[in-house]
Image (cartoon, rainbow, N blue to C red; front, side):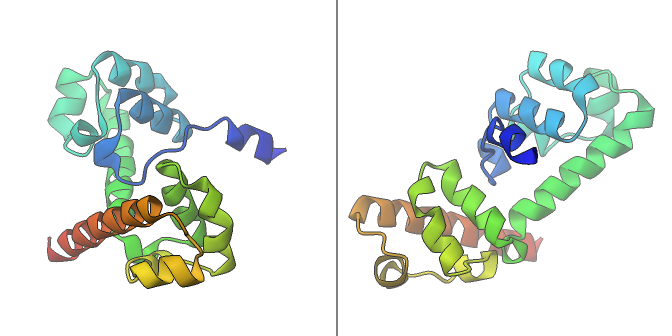
Length: 160
């Protein structure tokens, strides 16, 4: 089945700029860019660096053949768009996002309330406490802080 294989996946944080080289490596394997994953890991390509890669760096510094360069840049571009377009996140994306910083225990509540990206951006402390039943103050604060980060990223995405 597909389920067993997916659970072995590293949970990738939706904010790519926080990835370390291992997470970049994992992403490359997921995107069938296996041939280059090792090269990226050896060069310690982190999420921040990944988002800044261009044709010249790929071909000259990382030795990517020109035939693959466009495919890799397309994947990076899709990654960037998804990251900055929180409004388009599905319920699954939101649940992955929550899990990425250790709040898996609340995934069911978020699913139950059909929380998508656009809804996520508007959640308040009251919503988290009353509707999503997140009782622990620290967890609510953490979520609100993360949501605020998404709002800023989302605003930047729209601006630029």
